[in-house]
Amino acid sequence: SQELEQSPQSLIVQEGKNLTINCTSSKTLYGLYWYKQKYGEGLIFLMMLQKGGEEKSHEKITAKLDEKKQQSSLHITASQPSHAGIYLCGADIGAGTASKLTFGTGTRLQVTL
Amino acid sequence: EAQVTQNPRYLITVTGKKLTVTCSQNMNHEYMSWYRQDPGLGLRQIYYSMNVEVTDKGDVPEGYKVSRKEKRNFPLILESPSPNQTSLYFCASSGWTGAEETQYFGPGTRLLVL
Image (cartoon, rainbow over all chains, first blue to last red; front, side, top):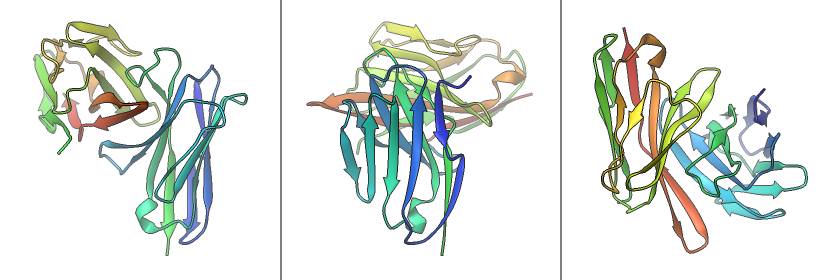
């Protein structure tokens, strides 16, 4: 079974709408990383969360870590076509760095006009 | 400009013909990793390195070798490629600035093994 589950698997939203993507781990999280990927291209690192309750923002994207639930949520406010892509979460499940990560299978986001 | 470069970007080869995919970073990062990405399986780690001459297996190391002789380079070697190694490969490096860790990924190498 997947150690990191992302939901939803895909999402279509109208431009200007808000959306949330969740990433849930079956193991203790020591760090949670969020990335964005355009189809077939390299990943772009968005942010890293380490402590329970930590919340970070990158432009209109906010992510929060719930340590107790072993879950992180990524929230996009007022979505734009430029937000379209695949969002991946990655988890450090013991190494203490991004050098050893396990990844979710991604959430494909489409933003319609 | 901070970047991770990979070469080649695209490669078609035949079963059994040794190949090397190079990876280089210009940020003096200690940590580097290799991943493969396959439909339905997501991104999986092949090998990682925490410093020069320090490498370790990721989740799918079979059929691959790596070396880390210098900090900036982390080549991925397929001694005898097989069709099940057809994939999209990414190299990444990560480092710390104060309490913040950041990662950079290369643009990817698309490999087809016939």
